Length: 181
Length: 189
Image (cartoon, rainbow over all chains, first blue to last red; front, side, top):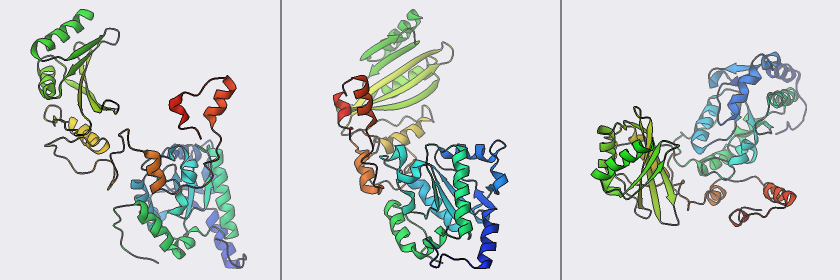
């Protein structure tokens, strides 16, 4: 996950500084956490002052918020969405459901551990995380981007076989094309 | 109100083989119990002749101890403002129920759900194969003998760390000096 030299070139420092102040979040919600996002975006907490704002389509977005539990059916769509997003891209796991299943840990149709299927850069704990926690999570993501160590997308490309194997294990009707980058 | 409910019950009883009934005056509600084969004609009669035009809901209860599914139709008469619950029992090992979406078209959706979630067969049901679940291979998940905990453990990897979580139930019981009931003990960690 970390850069091997843990040092950045000057051009990377400039690139990362620009990236971390303009995080466009895909307007896509799963589970119950999506209800916290409007509160975070609107006037009281006003995430846009940190450069965080919504994007309409996956190809315009930088951040994929997984807001809560993922059913197997949704996971397939989320993987599809994630692979459509263009670099740089980051994933935030939102709420305890993405960490260890939360209150749905014994459900027959929800996954328990998101980072087996998608590379997660930042987890926000809580059920539900309040907007303050969400902003804290975005702050953490900005910090990691500034240091150049939010390398989830690169990790996904390098370990595609590992992720594909896990994805195919739960998604029974797998019909994606075989491709890589 | 009680006379109206009695009258409704008597009128149904005069026309059909009523197994049992219950009257709840305060809820404005009559429960009618029938054998499975009478249900389509009863529903049609209640809809066309007695003004119970609105199907509120259809539901299934899994009586695993008695080896039966109970199927309940919730009807509502807008004019009299009275509810009727039409109940029937079917065999749990061979669950077949008549398809009745020609009486109320919305029954089609309910029947699709019960076919998927309880494995009840509705012969002649015209609907796509899948309703909510995608390519489901296990047993019907809403049946009570489906072990959801075991299924989740087998299919979805769990992060270590949950198993040493403190049991809230035991802590509360100890604090207030109560005993944990037997049915809850097997869930205690």
